[in-house]
Amino acid sequence: MIAQHTMAFFWGVCLLTSGWMTYGEASVPENLDKSIDELKVYYIKDDRELHNAHPVFLRVLKDLKVNLEEPEQNLLMSIIMDTYSRIFTRMEKDSQDEATKEKLAHVQEHLKKLQENYFPGKSAELKTYAETLWAIKEDDPVVQRKALFELKRVYREATQLRNLKNKERRRRQAKIIKSKSLNRS
Image (cartoon, rainbow, N blue to C red; front, side):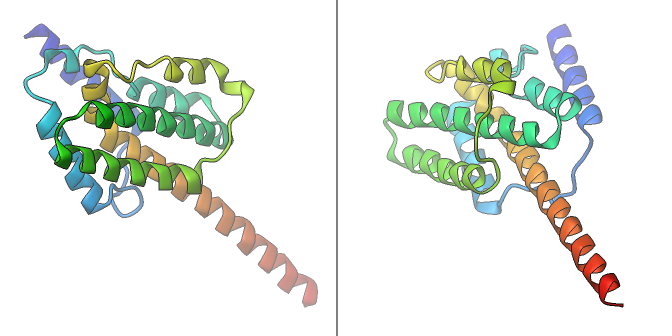
């Protein structure tokens, strides 16, 4: 009972410190949302290990927003997406159910597109985070269930970073256009 209260408190703190995002800017596509929910039903039963106050990705996400600049955040999010890909590849390989394999492949497609379009590259500055994520045991069923449990939150965070990147680019373009028009006057 105490563990459940501790976990509820932990998630509450996580939500408060990272803030709420609007669904218009940072959301999980409906078809991906459905696949994730169906995978959760398949993989996550009444699992006490899921709520042991040791998240797979969410603690890194919190540090990511607090301690890192945008380029580093993008790099770390790329590494997180890569780690998810390794986990789901392993889950797909281990699954005997064809429908589950298809859902895992569908989720991976979305993660791959997100990673390719918005979080390219890797750098030595984030070696510690990278090593932590690369050390995640993708064949561990508890890690797999935790990763699935955290996926929507991680996906929303990745989408929010993408949107911030696009806003900065538009702001720079507007500034350039404005300075060109002032120079002509």
